[in-house]
Image 1 (tube, chains in turn orange, brown):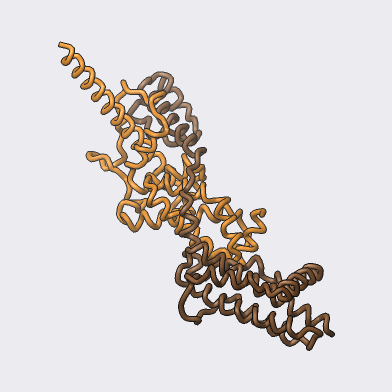
Image 2 (cartoon, rainbow over the protein chains, first blue to last red; image 1 turned 90 degrees about the vertical axis):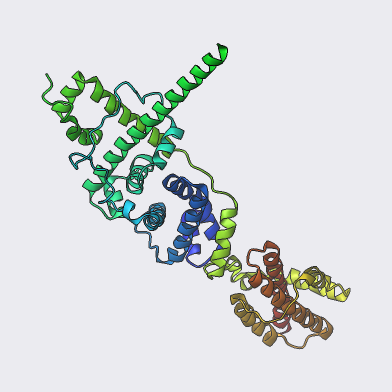
Amino acid sequence: MPEVEAIRLAQQGDAAAFERLYQLHNRRVYSLCLRMVGNTAEAEDLTQEAFLQLFRKISTFRGESAFSTWLHRLSVNVVLMRLRKKSAAETSLEEVTEPDEESGGPRRDFGAPDLRLTGSIDRLNLQRAVEQLPPGYKSVFVLHDVQGYEHNEIAEIMGCSIGNSKSQLHKARMRLRELLHEALRDKAREERKAAGGSLGAED
Amino acid sequence: MATIGCKDFPDYLEPWMEGDRHPDALAHLRDCPRCRSLVEDLKMIQTTAQEWGRTESEPPAHLWNSLRVQLVQEGLIHQQSKRRGWLPSLPRPALAGAYLAAVIAVAFGLSGPVNQRINRARWLEGTQNSTTPLRAQFASAEMNATTLSVPDSNPTVTASLHNNLAIVDNYIVLCEKSVNEEPENELARDYLFEAYQQKADLLAQLSERGGSGR
């Protein structure tokens, strides 16, 4: 059943059409939720909530935008609502900055120059680091760099300015770099410890 | 020669990552391995994120089931919708075939399919007090079928069809109750669907008898 037909039938309450729409879009919605919350149980819950809202509102869909765009915006909003509920203060875009302790401005710490991320980060490392980001940074980073949204779309979804979205993204990337450097240092320390332990054992 | 220092470079970094290659930033990067490393790291993060975005995860299969239960509970979907209008749209040969099959079955005293289903559904016990939107559709079809029915050459067959209709109605009420109590129970829904199919067949046969009798 083509998507257009499925939408038309779903607007009439057809169960098979609902299932078809779910099958067409569940992977992308679930992946988005999983990236945003980093927790499978919560991602499942959010996916269900997103589709529930979709089916509640499907009769109002008039086709002005692509159905997938409509659904994904709705899904992002569901996730953001959840994040806001979880930590209202942290999620506020204006408030989620990490000011430099001395100047009150953005941090200018470039990280240790001897550590290079090139060739040493993979998706898993990045995922772990993203999970540690404050919700506001995480949302903009996932939406822009992972999901491929443009800043104007993010601004519209998140109710902020384009400049704010750009600024948050930059800070998110900088924070990720720090987190990845920390992870590399921890790893190097553990390896040294393990090497020292094995040398000691040999003695 | 670089016109800006490391201290000023962060002001150029955000636009740089957005594609704005300011000559001062470019000159600084040529001379500064530390800032070059920073830009390379950020590009690496960007690239890895894009790769991550190209992979999708499969949600667990049970997710649709629990979503469907909720949709049914909220009355957003109706399982039988795709069969709406099925009875009136049946082609005449199909009606004739169904009618012939019913006549043969009744003639041989084999009103079994309905009874067998009733036996299968003994687990569905309880009161007979339930309604569904489909009932309204069937009520209308039933009204047409019974009013169209005229005395025919074999009143025994007609009486048997009416008798079977009453049995199926009873069965439908039980199935509806079961579905209302356990919306996630696939078996209950299947039984209900089969019951409605059975009723549709019987109504089609009654309708055909009425039509042919004129």
